[in-house]
Length: 134
Image 1 (spheres, rainbow, N blue to C red):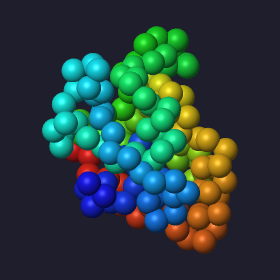
Image 2: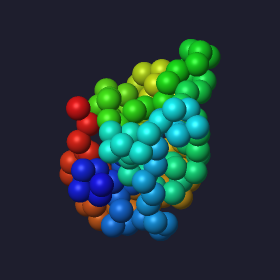
Image 3: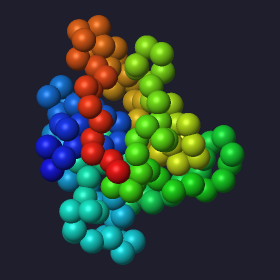
């Protein structure tokens, strides 16, 4: 699982090597919503993203004020829904799915933004490669 995700949370791209909490294997489509334990429905997630996602599958896009599905790491490409701010500290959602996911998972938590800032200064952020996503 860690290898497939290139050592990163498949949502916020937090790196396992620099995480302050252990990572989890999370159900992309929650079991309570019909998801399975198949590898195609499992993603590596940092504790923050996993806790905030919980059993959500969709939420409000803060720009369009419509319900949007959350990002699905097995079916979508990260780059098609997100980009980094110019200083690589903030993840910006570029689609309804991206914006809804950034908001729902709180992908720009203050501690995570600070960690990205330090890692960027040390040349350790952003990650060299993105997780395998279609």
